Image (tube, rainbow, N blue to C red):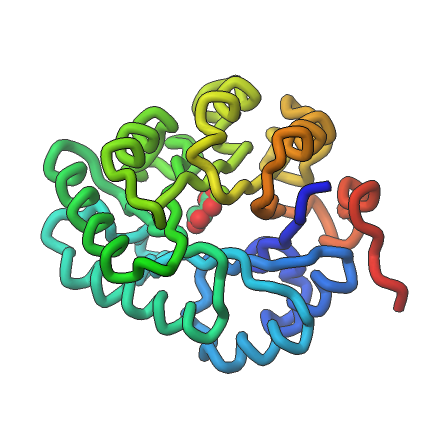
Length: 257
Ligand SMILES: O=C(O)C(=O)[C@@H](O)CO
Ligand SMILES: [Mg+2]
């Protein structure tokens, strides 16, 4: 059975942030991820994490002004100093939260200069934090127009060129479906590069049920293939989070009150 984590940026938003950790535990998750933890002091998050008994699976590098359109800095020419500062901030948070992975957000950019900048920044980051697992994630261009890393083969070329032991693929099955139209084939091509998986339903990015991806079959395949990473629920609950968790119950029952 895969190890399931809850993305607390999208799930359990009915609760204040520090209460979402325990809500995830009660629901049966074993880990959590938090995309943008930087508005809350790290010690406060660390306390909530510790009290819940869960593990932190993933944080993202900062996208300094999300509301203004920032989606990360790693591929932005001329913003190298800001990228390094933002990466240092994620390392500060990592020191408190011990996430399995830090997702390095590429940002909105395109072209050769952005590609060169991205490679330089990834190279710097992998050397700066050799013990920290780092990931890159292709994100589909419909949901996030202009995001630099928007294709799995593009990510594979970069990873294969780098061969850095601490840099790997974050495989979001929802994005894989939106980008290629064939999530299982994309998984087959790229699973050896993957250390973290995220899931969502293909209809409206809601619960991972119905829609074009057969998740029970995918989870069975992950078991058969010996995948040892987490599978994070990164979706927009269609209604109250707890009301949509039936997909998790065959794998992990909610804790007794
Ligand atoms: O959009 C996604 O999918 C992600 O996993 C995020 O890291 C982007 O914030
Ligand atoms: Mg994702």
